[in-house]
Amino acid sequence: MRLTPVVLVIISLLATSFSPPGQKASGWVSLLDKDLSQWESYLSYAHRADYNGKIPTDASGAPLKPIGYNKDDTHVFSVLTEPGGPVLRVSGEKYGCLFTRQEYDNYHLTLQVKWGTQTYEPRKTKLRDSGILYHSIGEAGAEYWRSWMLSQEFQIMEGHMGDFWCQANSAIDIRSFQSEGVMNRVADEKQPFGAFGKGNDYYCMRSANYESPAGQWTTLELICFEGKSLHIVNGHVVMVLKDSRYTKPDGQDVPMRRGKIQLQSEAAEVFYRDIRIKPLDAMPKAYAALF
Image (cartoon, rainbow, N blue to C red; front, side, top):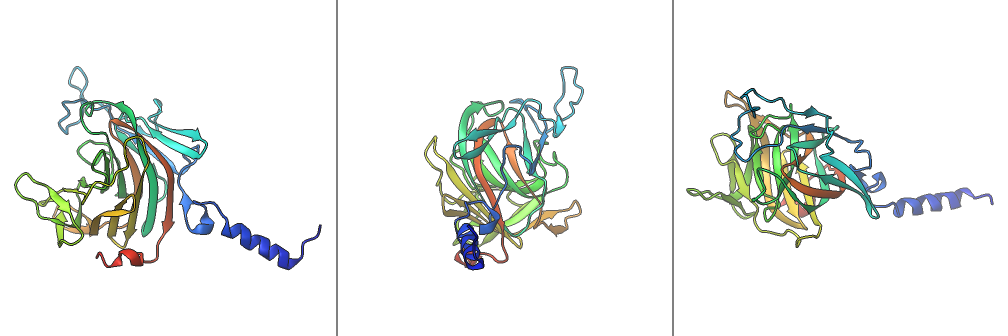
């Protein structure tokens, strides 16, 4: 049957209207496929419980070399084929990360996360842990665990989805209650911005716990626009951040608004699915007033 131009246009419009989630027609781009084609990996060490921030050593005291880039022979990172689409499994057995080949700025990232059952030293008796590291720049191994790039952290931890950590010499301002003694800052969108980084606090707790029950998927969203960012858990904003930057050794602050995205391997098994990203040309109106 020969189709007229009008019919062809209608078919084209219908195809666009019903494009599946994660496709470019909707603005979203999927970052997960069976070959991890948009990612590279870095692995450092299988850290021990007595790790103290120094380069690990062998039995003779000689420093050990990290495993390095794209040398995942033990399949710390693998993709499972599931009926609903690919699922990334991070075993957690060795510290390290997957990181995007591409750098991003001004974007909305969304993914779903669920815990596995395996844990390893030094987290055998601690909460299961992972994280999204954003605006990642430089070489891996720049921070305490010698496993990740200079970056800002969207914490993924049991009961602590959406916490923040400075990675290496990163800095940022967060709406939060002030710290007091051994008490950390706690995020609150009605509080003034407080500084995090060198010479200040370096860790902030999320405003509340919105993690899904054990065994269920938790949806996380990270919105970044011109140095501002939002940590969102199951639709709830749990942290408001601005002025992303890093501090040079001479004390000068440098804006840090663009970089790669890392997913951590941190001694706990974790699964990710539906990892998608889309560019932004403005902070979404629903959130603009938070700044």
